[in-house]
Length: 503
Image 1 (cartoon, helix red, strand yellow):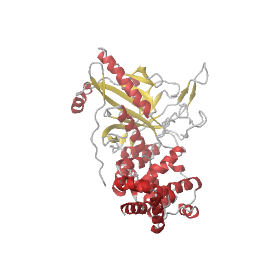
Image 2: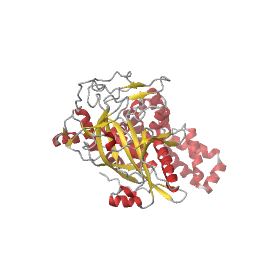
Image 3: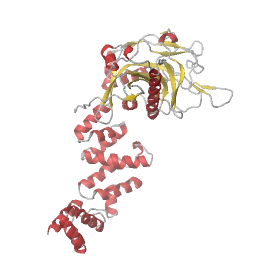
Image 4: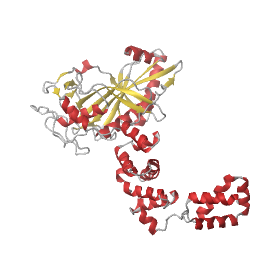
């Protein structure tokens, strides 16, 4: 297996009125577990159901109802931890996080503060320029989601939908290793990619299946290195949390806006207050939501209705044995086995469906040529039609057929694009299209030579110029291709033109 090695990206700095400042960012990502039922009940997790239709008695906090752990959700959390190369804790426990909100019927959230199911892991975040940041994951814990309060259906009342109440979440907490807005977005994108490969979260940010709380602080150059050396957070600035971000673009904007706000406060002689803030993308500002709570504010204590969660190492090993090939490993293999560039391999492994499509198409064929057709022609056309790879009307077998026709010199690359268009819109077999539409490439050198002779004889002035400047030979090649309807073998045309011009 080919190792992927990267340099560490430069730290993003922001210029203040008095000095430059560095960013320090950590993220708490809430990822909804891909499961048909909730964490502590058998109620459905189906998105888009009628309000309050996916609610069990325990979700609604009916008296006497007790939670029962969903084993599959635990398995999904373990699978996620293994995918992030994290420590799996065989002993974990659930706690009650007490706070009141209308869409939290119990008056507390069941979470894992003190003993999470997953410990330290890591995520390699590639920046696309040959650099990558290794971001540490501090922990992953399981918790139940709250419901949804709706405030815009009536001018005088709010409504509560409890469908999401009790849905299983994995809170993935990073270390403050992210050093810029672009890195933050890239980290979330890489994390989403891994979870999708694992099948533990669909990563759909629009439906709320994945959202992030972003912690932002600033520090003077050199202070972060002191923190890394000592582990003392006192070397870093006071952090503020930007809550419930569900857009890569808005995350970058919010970080930039919040950092500049903090710089202005510090350079004016003030102090940043630790708090939770919301980002307004229209006004390009963050606004205070509430002072940042600490653990003691929530009066955490072990949940008396749930025993500690004890799992066996053998079960963890069984889960590990079923892990799919993950993005970094697949990318390295594509580079090694198919001779792809780093960029092409990254595009093709961006999601599981794309990588599977490419690999099936590339079997027994030239990897670079296949990658070029998948990325440029197929992906380009699918994007134009707003289709996913799973909806492609051109199957791997059909696209492979086009590539085979090019490789055998049956058609030129130019004609192949016409064949692709016909196959894309009709589903017809490429070989049948070439045969019935008369698109087969002309390889008869006699016929090609005759066309070359005709063009040269009809353009004596151009011949004279081309003999003085050989670069002008391309004009003759173009004219011959035009005269033959693009069917002449380009290699043969180039060779014959060059020969004739030297006579």
